[in-house]
Length: 160
Image 1 (cartoon, rainbow, N blue to C red):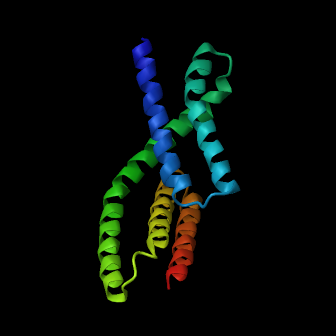
Image 2 (image 1 turned 180 degrees about the vertical axis):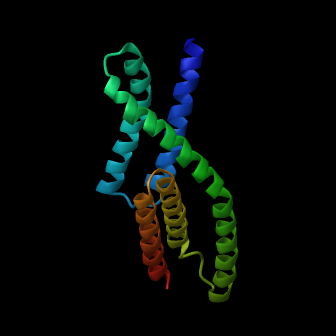
């Protein structure tokens, strides 16, 4: 019994760390928004075991709706982000090849590393947010695409 509970907690913590890394840490610069995103992910991670325990005891039945909705959304985000890892890897390898070729031409070493990494993170995070939002509500999909387009143009403008 305790082995199963421990395994479930390790999986929940691992999934939330992955979601935090892909949706909060990678696309955001250090600052108040990244801290707020970290606290939100922490609260959502705590929501799952809290929902499992308190709704079954009957004390907090209203918690079932947000808790189980987050569990479903968490797995959708995990699947979408896992599927986007392959194109992200291909893009990273292509950019790395282009960067090394252009660095050889200029004689400079990778000044665009931060811009490339940030652009890849924003693109992946924006796409995951747009696709995840599309599965729950149409308006969230529009906001996700707008943020992805804004992040890509801002990062693209910085590299030019």
